[in-house]
Image (cartoon, rainbow, N blue to C red):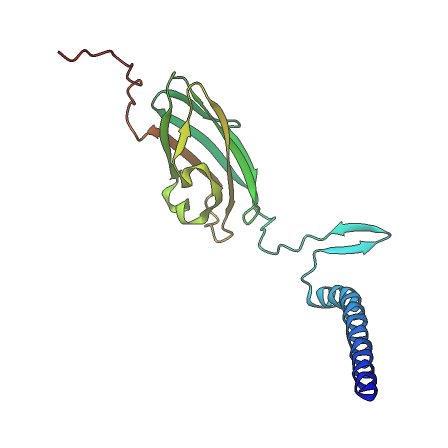
Length: 194
């Protein structure tokens, strides 16, 4: 019986040593992955940060940006409903392929909640397939509370394949009410049953 207990104790100690060695090995492997990962990123060119003199310097890795061209994007807003709607800036200059953000502002001038949708249009129309929106308030319906003011972003880029003869694009939104006028909440009226 004592021999059996001694053997079991020896096996348990041996297993404990193996588990400790495995845990230490996994920890060491995790630490070793950091320099390996950095080296692989540098070799493959997928890391956009590099150490230079103790500081991180961001490289301009986006080869999609055509810095030889500048496109003027003119912004316009039309309101079809109970609000004020306009871009916060009238125009922006961008290089094809460069990510840009512009803001539109809407103010619900009514004392009621309204639902609205924005529909974009582009001029010239041949620029439409080259105007790529990443984020836009026009992707979904907007619910504006009574007298609410809101600024809404449009994040976009111009496809570098835009024909060279186009140097100006007009982005125009028409913002209109979609749910129709909502009636005021009915007031409770006392009714007598005779």
